Image 1 (tube, one colour):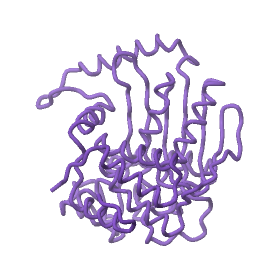
Image 2 (cartoon, helix red, strand yellow; image 1 turned 180 degrees about the vertical axis):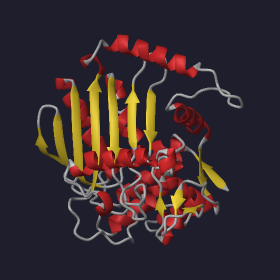
Image 3 (cartoon, helix red, strand yellow; image 1 turned 120 degrees about the vertical axis):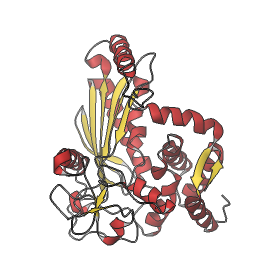
Length: 358
């Protein structure tokens, strides 16, 4: 069962929680906007369902509510940013804006981030570039829950990649995906429903296929995109590795199995080689390659042709990356956001800490 809340209702509650954590008005506003962008786009695993997790990280001293986010190294087109253990929801937009500003000056901007935390959905940050006629990219490493191909050891996070590309009359192309067969948040949704996971999502501690949605609590692992070697899991493993290296090895964050875990109750890894989680952002000015209007006209043509591709039997139409989320946003901003009962209960208990009613 689920309860439907208006965007404004969830916004005010979430904003109040971030303020109670000690965030400034500006940071609480931004963090709320980034977090709820997941709910309105239908990515329920990364929205308000994560709010109590951020609070627990703050209570454990792993999130700094008043960070001094700063550039610690830069060139005209690149930068490294120290997030000062701030909310990734705040650190990431700061870093993406730096990438956009550099792209304005020299055509492209590339920014790596260390000492940060979970940054919500990657798509939000990539889409920041669209209004500037730029292509945006965003990626992050994450808690080590994924076993590389042929391994039983958890070495990588779900390590998402997002790319946003502007068009003219057509909606933007927005790809936002984990480099695993399924994101951990989808397992959490199944756990709340007491449902099984599809075969190919996870393996048990010995590397055997499993449909247990709680298998990560039993030392099992998520599988890279492709599920197994015969279906291309080595490619998902490679993609997740690229994200880890760009986000963390390049910036000075902790990488691989040393990435800080999201659950506050999980002990931090020993001998961590870097600081916090890492992110990587890119912004490319379209007119650094060809006139923006010309490019966007051709993007319209590309999108229309793919959208009109002949669908397979049983399917109504071919989708463009970003279509489902855009359509969901239009519905949820008018009809409200459904929140499943376990998350409602979690938020209700969270509110009681500071006498806030959901």
